[in-house]
Image (cartoon, rainbow, N blue to C red; front, side, top):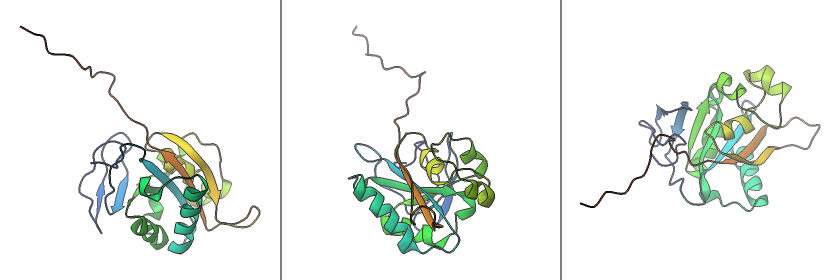
Length: 181
């Protein structure tokens, strides 16, 4: 299915959940996204405190996209740690953007190399990064490192990072021309 970094998704439609298949399997909840082709293919990784409002999540995402001159229409998914799958603020922001919420286990996110690590995230959910790791978990390039919804030195209710999905090709697949007879 378009919008999934592995190229396949089972079952999710508006208001339901299903398991993504492929090398970066996680859970997806919400509406399915449009095409990841072309200049699109943006995944927004989001870390959030319990009970954070959708307005704060959506506002930080909009600000990050605007500052980087990236269109919201290019976002194919929000991504986070699996323990936040039912967080109303994250689900509300995904719904506003019209994209699914992909989730990954803390173990999977902990294996993703990131620029910014957080002791608070490690204590809270068992991974040193949520926003950057979730954005990168599907493969691709980090465009916007972790941003916070509060000034430095104050607790932030939300963090986000944005990555562009990479094109995956199989090294065992070759394109050949048919031979003329």
